Length: 269
Length: 269
Image (tube, each protein chain N blue to C red):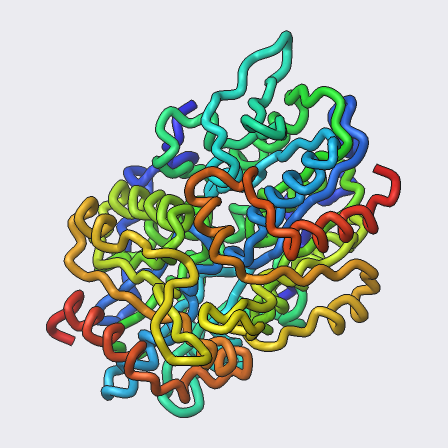
């Protein structure tokens, strides 16, 4: 059985990929595997760059498990603006956020949609959202290699794909499936983030590796990605994220490597 | 915008749900959110019960991010048997495993399928696999509330849904979306596992909570679930899983609460 069909409408049959007006560059953040911290990395990337004065937006393409509004404390609904959707912004850094969860009457309810509806919603949000002038639009992809990520790859003209994984071999293997997908759909592989790479002992402050040693360098070598970013497991991240206060996060051990990595991906930004 | 459509063919229009012949009971393990340890909990549940002499199988319904074969070291391809698919078994405990990854020519390649193909594959595997006599068939659901989990809920006659989450509030919120889905599709809510609930300090062995205190009891109360299982973050799990040796795991701090929880869900097993 072949694993790759780009089924029901391959890239060739699709309209040209396009990006919203005013958006200078688009970076998709994905992992194949869920729960590796993809949404946290996306939100922190936005925080790090917005704090440097850049204009940043986040398109949350994870329709059935959206996390971005929760992490950044956004609850305001998008509003209509002429013929487009105007996304709300975060309270401090004014990061623009569009997420399915902001359109639900009750955000605790599931979006029980099959693939075609998911794809249609993504294409509609992508085409109709008025972001204004942005230095960078981050797209938070859901896990897997089916409808939602596939539709983003086929709809947006992505300037790069940033892969997120953890040191666990299993996470790396599933993440590499998403690298295959990105490459097959002609999206530049921008770099890889190894999240939860290490932790600090709560007693003595020494570094230890709760998920093992990881193999970031070997992934970079195998896929020819110059940018590799190791981030620690920081309990403050979970705590601030759960309170919708990720904008307040200031740990340079996390933010500096992230910002440097993003600037290595996009030197002029 | 309504979050719930059970779109493109609701339960009413579907054929009767059915289970494979010889399978005494079916428990779906899901989370809504990815990466909370759903596959690890599924595999460990199988290990705990198989070690007590029960006959256990695992149907890996995560077609685009399959983990079960890797965790349990299964590489053998399913074989044809009369008119059905005969799943391979693990080396020691003889747990039957059916996973998409075992059918791929190259397991590192992604399955780039849109929803309808995913749903069709799940229905076909469900209908055509010959499990033989099983005390329990565990179904490892992928993240989200779209095609794959929805198809499982609509195809199998599930005896229970075991939800997996972590102490992070965000994981809990996305997990509760899957509880909504299970309830809407008339599947009994069997219990909830709080994974990575606590860890042991590598210096002094004391317990600490790297992801915060969690709210297992409040989730149980809100949804009326008697069974709540707290599992620690154990680095040995990642290490053994990455080597395909989860069958060798023997930490009773993990296996005992899991086995007790499963026996509380199915007292006669």
